[in-house]
Length: 129
Image (cartoon, rainbow, N blue to C red; front, side, top):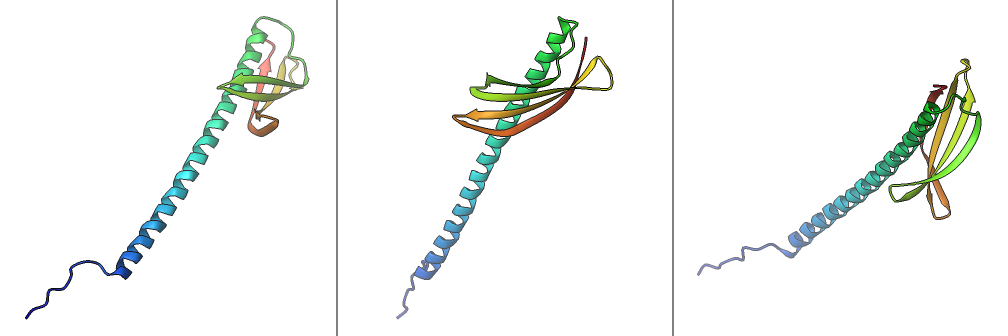
């Protein structure tokens, strides 16, 4: 009489397979979390750069309607863009040319009472005309 053996997996084989699937799941979950964090960071820095570029464009446009030089010194301003509040720190300094100013802009994100950053730093030169 021939005996028919079961054609399934043993309990040990099933437990090993379960452990392998669990470890793979944890690894994938960790990677997805890292990717979402990186994406948020890139989005935040991109928005900060746009805030800095908008501020710089506004300074240059203001020079189009006046012949006055951009005053030197430090300035701080808060703006809203992209549904967020941003703080812009601006430092204007003289250069060797009398009609040219060096402008340093740093952008921080304001979240509640916290300021995150600087998220972007832009250095540019703004002329008299």
